[in-house]
Image (cartoon, rainbow, N blue to C red):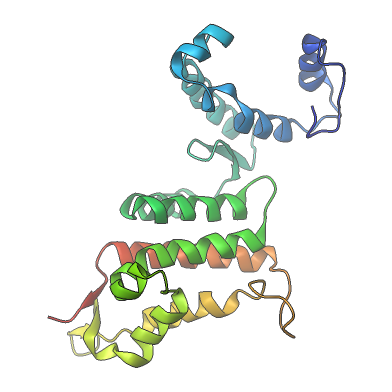
Length: 243
């Protein structure tokens, strides 16, 4: 109710529920999104959830599983994100499968940042600046300890230093599993170019520079898809040290 600026006396819970469900002027997607995020199941253990609300976690999961096909059958542009507890905009099945595969192949920390970036790009309230922050951090979580182990351990590695290591300092030590024209593993130029594209596109990172500005939605969507590919490549051995 507070998110929708519909505050009323808290004693009238049933009236609140009736207003949210039946009032055609209300944004039902916003209501569903808020309910998913604020559901007591995420903050209570099993015993307390049952004692206070007479439901189990299985009941909640079952409701979510039932909700998703309802949204799809109703032609909604949104679906449930079961990990982030919110609505996200639908993409085609092939794209979604690629994202899910990248998340599964990544470390827990990289997967967490990648999910956050995806939600910030495709959620009900997109945040393009956050997309860039989370997308770059997702790539850094995989790239930094792999390419610059000592710097990563000292907390001084960034995507920028990884680009420098692969692109200038020691490109001869690395290769891509993808074969080049000669049939041999190719040089690292393509992955360095992708990293540079993501790194330099973040214009919202610092203030005060002539080019600094808020990111826009199109940039954010391109950035998160690029991050998905980079995380997947880095997590599955496409970039590797030469033997």
